[in-house]
Image 1 (cartoon, helix red, strand yellow):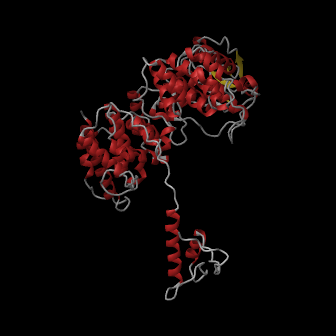
Image 2 (cartoon, rainbow, N blue to C red; image 1 turned 180 degrees about the vertical axis):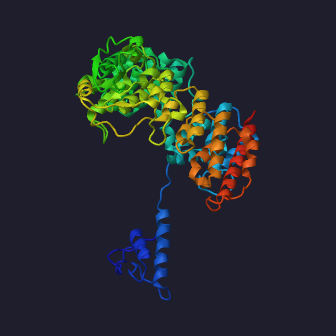
Image 3 (tube, rainbow, N blue to C red; image 1 turned 180 degrees about the horizontal axis):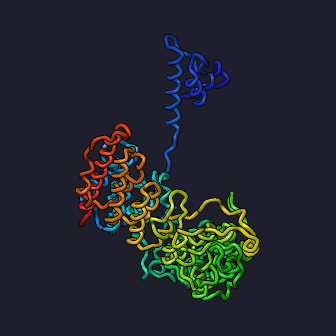
Length: 604
């Protein structure tokens, strides 16, 4: 047996210097041994820098050797099944190319004839969704990366990726956006699984709950509303807003009691959305309240016989009874509208969705008026204004500079209520639409004064001139066009482009159905050809050219090939413009042919 030496008889040497910390070694390395003396001693024949690196290596080994193995984490649950059919091989290869090119540099200012694959990815996803294909498993990470980089891709990409995208998103923080957005409905329970529906609604992720509610509203609006009502009071304000917006799907008068209750919600945004949805429904209590308020703000007046149609000396006619349509256009005078904006925004108006504080640059009274007119049922105006139709009402002169405010509000009401007749009246003829500010002249008013001069009589009738009316129109032609049927919308835009060119047509083209109709496509191409002949550069129309690449019918490629030639440069044209135009048209034709190939590859 070997005994341990006695501590009393052992001679202790000098204490060893403490080992330097990892932070000290890193600081010395970053600053350099010439600026800071390292906390280590160099051996004979070794430089100070080498000694510092040796100490860092020893410290690294020591730290790693001291780590304890972590307990194994629970394995993730298997990815859910996706029963949709797989992509055809050619379409799968095409998707891989589109995703690989997503970081490429595109844009309307690029030169060259190669198609911009980045801009074709959304269209490819939409076409694949029509066929009901599932995304290849190996391409899901690239698909999620593309959706993370481009918010405009997210809805289509998540729908195509299916339930496995959500499964992957739970395992990678960079894809957490997929858990907050609306994803695929492929794995949602069906109508014959009420227990599964309730479980998913109560325990599912937010994206799953939004998808479930939207699917239920499409399938059974009453069941979707009952599901939402069961947990409404316990939902967060931002979630209530998103869920309430889902009620647009299948919206009907059966939703009115729930929406009326939502008008008393704590969140202003929720109250505003509830009011918007109610005002889109005919015959609701909110619509009636707004109609009463709007009726008190607009009156019909008649000028004296022989007076200017705009009205220089007018007397009020009771807007509740109004003259008949026959008398209104008789020889005893001309009719006009006068406006009296509300003087206060009371609590009842605020509960019904009227926002009391105007945006910067807007007067309070004009702001309140616009909200009342926007929410009032358009069908009431014919009754109040002598039985006139929408076109006749829009053509009436408006006193004291209120025409812009009144017509802008009617435009928003037409969009909200999806009223085609009023939309046609407010749009008028495409050739009469003015360029630039979005304002336009319609019907008989195109050749008459659009605002009555301010006089003592009309000023008294309207409650004063409009000092706080906006100088320009805020109407949105593109949104207004969405109310028209697709073919009529395309025809209106085609005629507008034929009359005015492309300078203000970009947003209008964006709301037209894809592929464009033949008349619309021809109008766009003709306008581009005219611009080329005028000697301008193609990048002045880069936005429209990009839309044409994505929206023209691919079958038009061969017909447009003649535009790819390089004509003689006009004497007064921009230097080199014809060459740039040739490249732009080559890119257009090449993109159309590629879209035709993509369509064929996706065919079952």
